Each structure stands twice: as C-alpha cells, then as structure tokens.
Amino acid sequence: MKRAKIQLSPQDFPAELRPLLSKAELYDSSCHSNARTLFIAPDFYLKIDERGELKREAQMAAWFHRRGLGAEVVQYISRGRDYLLTRSLPGQDGCSWLDDPERLCRALAQTLRELHALSPAGLPRSTRLERYLASAEDPDGGYWDQSVLMPEFTVRSREEAWGVMQANKHRLKSDTLIHGDFCLPNVILNGGQPGSLIDLAMAGAGDRHIDLYWAVWSLWHNLKTDQYTGLFLDLYGRDRFDAAMLPVIAAFEAFG
Image (cartoon, rainbow, N blue to C red):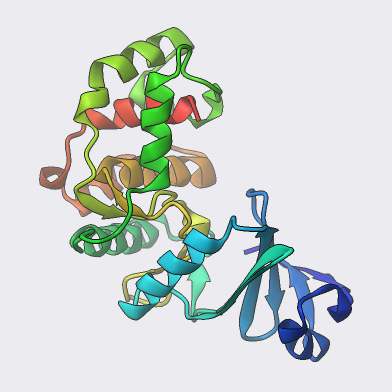
C-alpha cells in the first residue's frame, strides 16, 4: 500500500477530526478511485470524497466489521464532503505477497470461499452488478475499456463483447455476497488467516464470478503472468463456479 508523507492543515477538516489530525503524521495512501485516502499514523485511515459518495461504503464497512471481515468504522461525516474514518487492520495488502505467489493464491482463495459462503440476505445488490445490467441495456454498451480484458478469456473486440453480453445477461445472478472489486490492494492478509476486506462500496448481493474475475485479473496484472490463474481457481474450487462465465464477466467489465 503506497504512502507518501504530506502536510495538511487540520482546520480544513470537520471539527470532529481536527484533534486526531493535529497529533498524527499524515500520509497520502490514495489508490485509483476518485476518493482521496489518508493514512493517519499509526492507527487510522480517512477516506474523503464528494458528499454522499461514501454513505453506502460506510454502511457496508460496518456490516463487514460486525462479522469480523473488515475494519472498524470509527466515524462517518457528511458535511460539505464525505469523510469515512476507519481503524487500520493488522497485516498487509495482497500486493505485499507477490514474492510468494502460491501462498498468495491460497490466501486469496480461502478469503473468497469464506466470503461467498455468507448469505447476502437483507443486503442491497452490488453496484458492480447494477452497472453491468445498465450497460447491457445501453444502445452501444457505454464506456469501453479494453485494458481489463485478459488474453486467456478471448474477448477480442467491442463487437464481440457486446454479443457476449446480450447472449448471457440473463445468466447473471445476485445470489452471493460479493466484494465487487476483489483486487490485491483491497485484501488485507495477516499470516495464515483469511483476509480482511476494504473499499467496500461495491459489495452486496451479486454474482460470484465477478469476484473471481477480478481476483485472476489482479493476479495477472500484478504478477505480470497468467501462470497462477489455474492454481487460484483450483484452490477456490472448480466445482464452485462455471468457468464459462469468466469471459462473460470480462465482456461486461470492458464496458465499464
């Protein structure tokens, strides 16, 4: 997890946060989303986004924490902007385990099996799944991003992806609790235990193949090889999913 030391004025933040910010070293730990994430050493993370953007994430993070799957939500403030303060978790994110890919695959598979075994009853549908369904009804599919296509799953063009979407949109399910963005930076690993999960804005009831696709994509992207795709899927359990759905998820994801 990247951290760059920064200086900020506590006066630029809500009054409730100023005592904490004035006493701590601050680091920018932002990733690829529009939100900004600060590490407040040594114990907290503060996520900042436009007003209303973090409400769902705060709710899902609290749900995950109650079940021992995520970080404690210390405070959610929506005033001018959104501020989500969470306690840091022990361990390191999955990108810190790249020197031992087999161990990494085992930890990711164990984490995902345990997540998918939980009931999504009472939870909203994953926003990732909602986006897929909206793309399928868009006349041209919407935004196109070929960078998320893995060569292994052979979706080669926008036209082919559109055809795959239309032929398979009825196969998408919302029967599984999913993370929705199951990439290495969002899984905090600590020894041999199942990982904890962060960045939960897309979590909810969805299709397990979404998490599986993003797990193998993230392994491929970070390890610079698809050598471990098969191992991860074996460890997750080939009897737990339909391999033919992975190219379908790739097609949906390429339309953003």
